[in-house]
Image 1 (cartoon, helix red, strand yellow):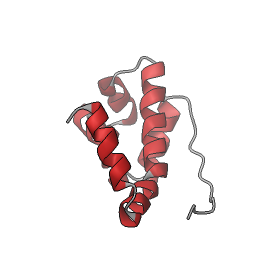
Image 2 (cartoon, helix red, strand yellow; image 1 turned 45 degrees about the horizontal axis):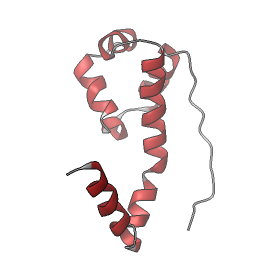
Image 3 (cartoon, helix red, strand yellow; image 1 turned 180 degrees about the horizontal axis):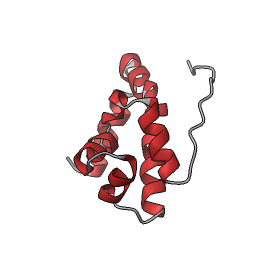
Image 4 (cartoon, one colour; image 1 turned 180 degrees about the vertical axis):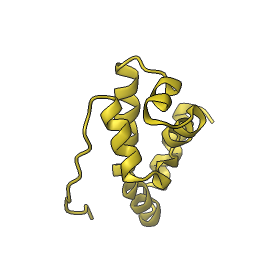
Length: 97
Protein backbone atom coordinates (compact mmCIF):
# COMPACT_ATOMS: atom_id res chain seq x y z
CA UNK A 1 0.00 0.00 0.00
CA UNK A 2 1.38 3.40 -0.96
CA UNK A 3 1.80 6.14 1.65
CA UNK A 4 -1.05 8.26 0.22
CA UNK A 5 -3.31 5.20 0.04
CA UNK A 6 -2.54 4.39 3.67
CA UNK A 7 -3.22 7.98 4.76
CA UNK A 8 -6.56 7.93 2.92
CA UNK A 9 -7.46 4.56 4.44
CA UNK A 10 -6.67 5.78 7.96
CA UNK A 11 -8.62 8.99 7.35
CA UNK A 12 -11.66 6.94 6.29
CA UNK A 13 -11.31 4.58 9.25
CA UNK A 14 -11.10 7.54 11.67
CA UNK A 15 -14.75 8.25 10.84
CA UNK A 16 -15.61 5.08 12.76
CA UNK A 17 -15.85 5.83 16.50
CA UNK A 18 -14.43 2.44 17.53
CA UNK A 19 -11.40 2.76 15.26
CA UNK A 20 -10.78 6.36 16.31
CA UNK A 21 -10.90 5.43 20.01
CA UNK A 22 -8.57 2.45 19.53
CA UNK A 23 -6.16 4.62 17.50
CA UNK A 24 -6.03 7.33 20.16
CA UNK A 25 -5.75 4.80 22.98
CA UNK A 26 -2.29 4.00 21.56
CA UNK A 27 -1.06 7.62 21.53
CA UNK A 28 0.94 7.33 24.78
CA UNK A 29 2.55 4.09 23.69
CA UNK A 30 3.58 5.49 20.31
CA UNK A 31 4.93 8.61 22.01
CA UNK A 32 7.09 6.54 24.37
CA UNK A 33 8.29 4.27 21.58
CA UNK A 34 9.14 7.21 19.33
CA UNK A 35 11.01 8.96 22.13
CA UNK A 36 13.09 5.88 22.90
CA UNK A 37 14.07 5.30 19.28
CA UNK A 38 14.82 8.98 18.72
CA UNK A 39 17.01 9.13 21.85
CA UNK A 40 18.94 6.01 20.80
CA UNK A 41 19.50 7.33 17.29
CA UNK A 42 20.57 10.80 18.50
CA UNK A 43 23.07 9.13 20.82
CA UNK A 44 24.43 7.19 17.80
CA UNK A 45 23.98 3.92 19.69
CA UNK A 46 23.02 0.77 17.82
CA UNK A 47 20.41 -1.62 19.11
CA UNK A 48 23.20 -4.10 19.85
CA UNK A 49 25.15 -1.54 21.88
CA UNK A 50 22.09 -0.49 23.87
CA UNK A 51 21.08 -4.09 24.45
CA UNK A 52 24.52 -4.84 25.86
CA UNK A 53 24.32 -1.79 28.16
CA UNK A 54 21.01 -2.93 29.63
CA UNK A 55 21.85 -6.61 29.82
CA UNK A 56 19.72 -8.03 27.05
CA UNK A 57 20.13 -9.14 23.44
CA UNK A 58 19.64 -7.08 20.28
CA UNK A 59 16.65 -9.12 18.99
CA UNK A 60 14.78 -8.44 22.25
CA UNK A 61 15.43 -4.71 21.93
CA UNK A 62 14.35 -4.82 18.29
CA UNK A 63 11.05 -6.46 19.26
CA UNK A 64 10.57 -3.84 21.95
CA UNK A 65 11.17 -1.01 19.45
CA UNK A 66 8.70 -2.57 17.01
CA UNK A 67 5.92 -2.27 19.56
CA UNK A 68 6.57 -5.20 21.85
CA UNK A 69 7.26 -2.95 24.79
CA UNK A 70 3.81 -3.57 26.28
CA UNK A 71 5.37 -6.68 27.77
CA UNK A 72 8.44 -4.78 28.97
CA UNK A 73 8.66 -4.08 32.66
CA UNK A 74 8.95 -0.58 34.01
CA UNK A 75 12.39 -1.62 35.25
CA UNK A 76 13.47 -2.43 31.68
CA UNK A 77 12.16 0.89 30.40
CA UNK A 78 14.06 2.66 33.21
CA UNK A 79 17.26 0.81 32.23
CA UNK A 80 16.86 1.95 28.64
CA UNK A 81 16.18 5.54 29.66
CA UNK A 82 19.16 5.54 32.03
CA UNK A 83 21.50 4.05 29.42
CA UNK A 84 20.48 6.84 27.04
CA UNK A 85 20.88 9.57 29.66
CA UNK A 86 17.16 10.07 30.29
CA UNK A 87 14.62 9.37 32.99
CA UNK A 88 11.05 8.18 32.61
CA UNK A 89 8.32 10.59 33.63
CA UNK A 90 4.83 9.23 34.28
CA UNK A 91 1.86 11.52 34.71
CA UNK A 92 -1.91 11.28 34.66
CA UNK A 93 -3.76 13.37 32.10
CA UNK A 94 -7.46 13.58 31.37
CA UNK A 95 -8.67 11.40 28.52
CA UNK A 96 -9.82 13.08 25.33
CA UNK A 97 -13.36 12.27 24.25
